[in-house]
Image (cartoon, rainbow, N blue to C red; front, side, top):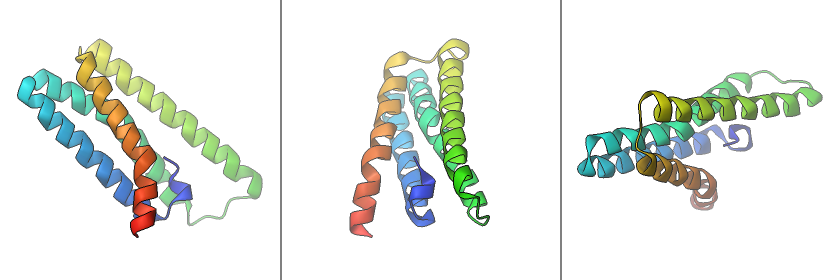
Length: 126
């Protein structure tokens, strides 16, 4: 998610929607087995947490007006950090916590799809 491309309100709505999808899928998978629910939450967190961190830092730095060349570099650095945090969460979930692969991947992909599709819907309605 590129929070700098959205208004703060749209980014908050997107993060909230991603969080709701993550919790809903976690609850649904929990009916199968609590380990499946925890795995689903871990998959959702691998998308939601890096996005929330990126949005937090974008909102924090909106007050400052960076030099033109620094905007692209800070965006690129933010995206690299997002990818690293995502990778770390997925590795921890799979290797350390022994997460179940199916619910982890299903929730991860679902929250990513929300990230891609929701801004268009939010912008058209609001």
